[in-house]
Amino acid sequence: MPKEYYSAEEVARKLASAGYVISKRKVNYYAFEKKLFQPEGSGKKVFSAADIDKIQGILYLREHSKLNLDKIKIVIDDKYFSLEEIKRRYSRPEASFQSYVTQNLEEVYSLSVYDRHLILDMNGLKVLLGSGVSTSFGSKPLVLLAQKRLLASNFIGTDAATISKYIGTRVDCVIGGDILKDLYFNIDLNKEEASFSATPQDQRGEVLPVTLVLNVPVVEIDLIGRPVRLFLDTGAKVSYLHSKLFKNYPEANLESDYYPGLEPFDVQTYKVPIKIAAINISVNFGHLPELLEVALLMAGCSGILGHDLFRYFNPVSFNLPGRLINLEKRAIPLA
Image 1 (tube, rainbow, N blue to C red):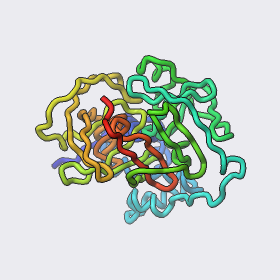
Image 2: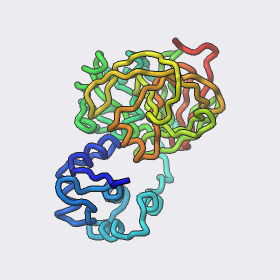
Image 3: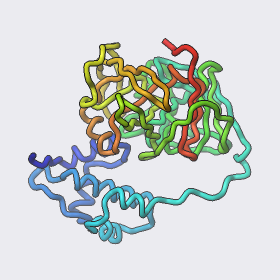
């Protein structure tokens, strides 16, 4: 099978969809100006999948190490250092202390659901809870657990105003994985509230192990006896599976959806039986858009689990520092 090559612009789009903030110019800068690695192809499409891994390695080292570009080049050029090995060797240890100001603090906010999006009212700000984005963004600073958090203005070109337009209601900020990964939080749709804490909260129900990829939680489901890894995105109204995982499942709904970096699109969903945390449920999955499909596969995932989680479970308690979620099954699933 012939090897596929990509242009710098295509590489930037793929990496952006996977949560990396990088431009076409920066891709070329690392490859041709700083010569951190030698691209495999030629002409306009010069970057292979292995080259994309190298760029991911560069971005990871810039964020998680104190190496300058000259030393990063040595690591990237080492043929024995895969992307996984780089992440293992240069993972940043977790902080071993806890602020006395926040260690006993818990904050509770009112929660509403608008078109299957979780919207919090946080001190007058309308905040979308979006665990599927790696970087929080918004038009105003966010104060959470006594800390003022300055946010990026956008995520891969999508800002709060654009999100507001797509959803059809006001959104001032999107709180993503970079903040949520360090917090304990409960989502209770019955009480219409969300609570946040810097220490573990009361957690009940089935335990679902979690890993983090680019700050985004990843869970494993059972699909007809096959383990499948999915991004868990509290901000996704529609759940998705890789096209190759679909069998003869019955059609469900035709949905309109969007994703940062993509234009709004329509997607046909199918009713798919899965098992999560040893509990059998049925989720309406759509086919992933091609660009997202490629990006998720690069992250080792085959889909996205979105708002459907809250149809079957309430409350849902997130312990992301401890890499687990607690799920309490509803007696009757939401419609």
